Structures are given as C-alpha cells and as structure tokens.
Length: 228
Image 1 (tube, rainbow, N blue to C red):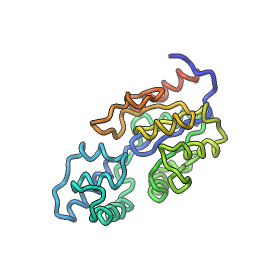
Image 2: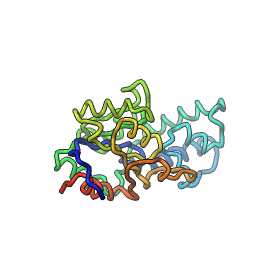
Image 3: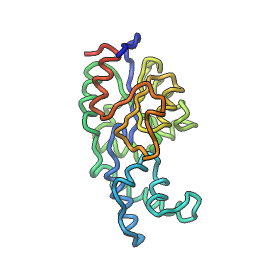
Image 4: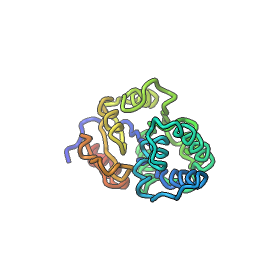
C-alpha cells in the first residue's frame, strides 16, 4: 500500500456504528417502547441497520410508519426519554477500538469524535464509558450550523485539534460520513462493520480506504503513515 507523504496529525471518528456499538441499547429501548404500545418485539438485525439513521428512522421502522405520520413525533420523544435512562448499559467500543485509541495516544496522535448524535446523549454516553476525558474534541450538531454530510463539523474538529484536515483521517460507517470527510479534504475510511442498510454497498461511497472490522484500522494507519 502506498504511504502518504504527510505525517498523520489526527484521527476523527463517527460515534454510533464506528467508535461504539450502541445498537444493543437502542434495540432494548425500541422494544421497550413497542411493549408499552402493546406491539411485539422486533428482530435485532432489522433494527441494527437503522441505528446510524437516528431515532426517527428507528421509530418509523419499528412501528411501520411514514416519517410524516402524526404519531412519529410523540413516539420519538418517548424513545429518547427511555434512551436517556439506558445510555450505556450494553454499549461498548467495537473490538479493537480501545487498543487503537491507546496506540494513537501513545503515538501522540490526537483523536476526536464528530457525530450527528445530539450533545445530551453523546456527552452522557462518553462520560459513562470514561472516554470524554480522552477525546481531544467532541463535535455534535449543536456546535455547527450544518450537519454531516456538510464538512463544517470536521473543519471545526480540526481547528480544535490544531491540525490540517489534509493530514488527518475520518472514519465512518455511513455515506454521509465519507462525503463529509472527502469534502473536508481528509483521508476517509469506511467502516464496513457498522450499521449499514442491506441496500447499501460501502464500496460505492468512494472512500479512500475500507476496513471490515475495527481492529484493521491501526495496521492500516501504520502502513499509510509509516508509524510503529
């Protein structure tokens, strides 16, 4: 693999489906909501594919409702209320992530999070997992005027880390992540292990690199930037 000429200055991650496997808690919450509405629980795999699309998508999938249906707003709010009480019960970093973060920190390469997840849930989740103090930057939708796929949040993260986007990497499990990274001028890595819908193919996203599991990210970065 061809090495990149510039030193690696920072690595940024999407949150749900890239850094953290939040699906188990989301699925517990949606099935709790279904039970409250006297509806049967849903299959794990079907709901997992919707996690990166947010609360509205999960509610619409679970209740078979169009996004414009008048019940969606109330169900979504109840979903979020339950989730706030169940943020990090089963959520864990994907296998290989903690070793990756340890390696980045040991190599003096700052890392951060750029997510479309609202700050209330992001900060609460990271605090419970003791990751908030380690991230060099945490950018949520409240910090910018335009969400991903617009690159504004990635540019803000790079400013906070005092790094050049062209010497930095963004890892994500959704087309909007790769689009945002490319528009920001960053190297992009598509996380095939994330929450990807069955009708999507990450190879169509035109990311610079691909990984099948999180444990592949470290050796990929090592090969690209001549890091030990």
